[in-house]
Length: 298
Image (cartoon, rainbow, N blue to C red; front, side, top):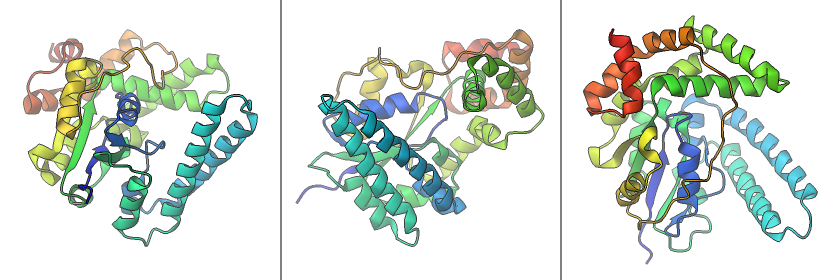
């Protein structure tokens, strides 16, 4: 009988290297991860958003079919990858189409195609917004469940998130900077609650700490992530063998937009409570955080 695999959940934070980490784990010989990184299964359950997720998935499915039709027939590897992504997308659509199904259907999705690998799972940053009750339910899914939260310098994470949203709305590259500025100042006036929620490291850490045993949660810093030391720590935590990481391979590189000194000063003030909480709770923080923390304290 094959031993039950460990279940891995990447729970954020948004714009903190979660895609790069997932792609690393996806390529690891001890893991079986589906090609879709963010399943949004538990946030859809908690917030009744299966309909929204189905619309997103069907849009994705259409794009994959177009890419498959456009793929040159001699590119066998890409064709195979696209067919695998389409199959994964169809399976995930089926999962969201029947929200009355219980958790065994979700586990069936994660396990489908597994050939003895010891780790399954997913990485959905939105899970950092889940209630303590839902996180506890996830933690009890298997004998071994592991959660990873990656934190990035709050000001840098905010600016990256704002730039991402601006790029999605911009019709032309030259529109990105003005849209970024507009979203940033609207955020400062209390708008864009989704960005605020993802900037609230304190709430994320409090809910995760309340729902999980210490052995189930690993908190890392984005600024330390792209090192073999961090990767070895992750592999040990997940119970998989040490494996080299492609540190030179970028994933989801953000569009360019410049934060000026006035914006940076305001962002430091808005996010000062997050710096204080992380430092007081976790202790030492990366040097990249300290300049913003010191500026706030002056």
